Image (cartoon, rainbow, N blue to C red; front, side, top):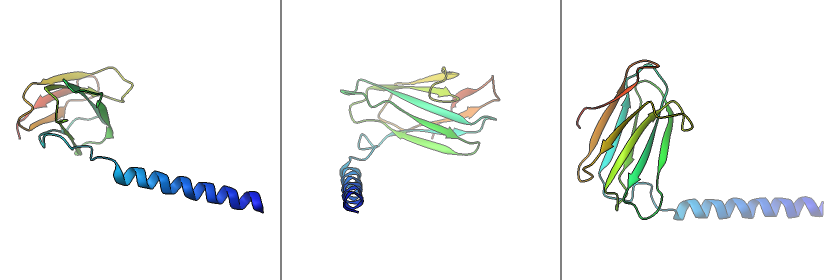
Length: 126
């Protein structure tokens, strides 16, 4: 019984610490306020990965597995000078298409078009 109480107390303490860390974590888009928005209009489940150029520490990440009709928005980190957007089927897949974004002072919108094997990123303007 004593071991069960200690285990329960340890789990509760760990959960509290995790919740505190999440509450104090900075927002994922605490940068310039400008963004890259991608809408999936292709016949695939898409993953888009963002490689931020010029940032002081690695802030690269992926939006995984979004279906046709869904959109995802990635905000430029404050110190980003440009970005590379990679279209993949999963974050471990090779890039099926890529786009370079040079101007971080404005928003960029893309659509994913095509079918499996012919996926393309098309900049549409916002």
